[in-house]
Length: 292
Image (cartoon, rainbow, N blue to C red; front, top):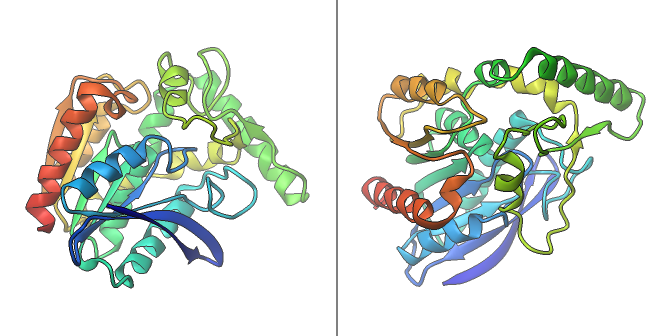
């Protein structure tokens, strides 16, 4: 297995990632992206290496404004930009001589699990989609939080937009916090679950421009579900504290070729231990069936 640093342009900004190559010629390839506020090194190399060990090349990248990718302000969360980055990553990967770009799958988790549904609907180059604990509907997710939380989010978001219009530094909110503190994620398992993913020594800051609070309700990957032609594996967490799992099930039923697995776990559990082994085993089998 080789790990090769690569970079590509997305709307004029350099995005960086790692290409994992197995010891075979022209392998099928999987493009991977992370969830909300996360960098690619937050546990995802473990997935990439497992895929690579079974004969798949993997391109794991950071969205603009995150990790090793360029762009300001840092940690700018914008799902529409993330989707564009995914599409540009696919375009880039298809140009690489080392892989078989005609056998291309995509993989996303959490917020990224929603992105891959949108990308799968938009790109005919995608031949298989794995969507792990996906964010599927901004409306249902927003409505699962108290009205007081929604009002605070609106106020934070407006403050950030006003500051950006005045060319001032962003008004930020925590990406993750304990219950009782406003953050993009503040459920009982959020702080421990999320921070457990962070690579030791990572130069990651727990804040993001608050304008994402205004965008979240508008982002609805479920609206693209019927347009996805590629086969999809959707792994849903029945104990998800952040994403209403019923909305994910409803979305899976709109997809023409969808294998849906409902797992007895929380949102942050598939990255570790037996649940990691269980979920990735199913993902590998799915990619073998659809890409090889």
